[in-house]
Length: 57
Image (cartoon, rainbow, N blue to C red; front, top):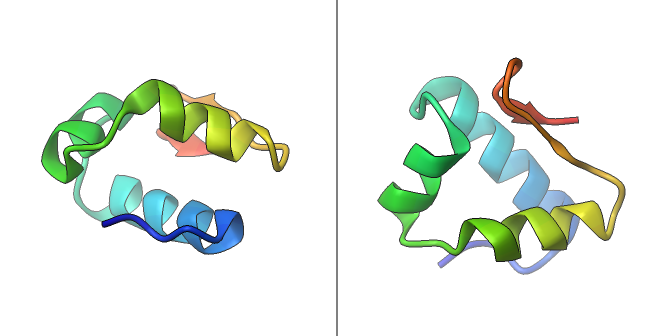
């Protein structure tokens, strides 16, 4: 289960993207997470996914 706090979620997702997953889609597949929901939750606190950097910025 992913963290509920958006800042902790951001930290967790970016760490996983850096260390384990080649893309957000791969992360979502591994975590069984909804990509659109994850993007929306992090966009609410001002972060968007940068595919080239493979992280939320």
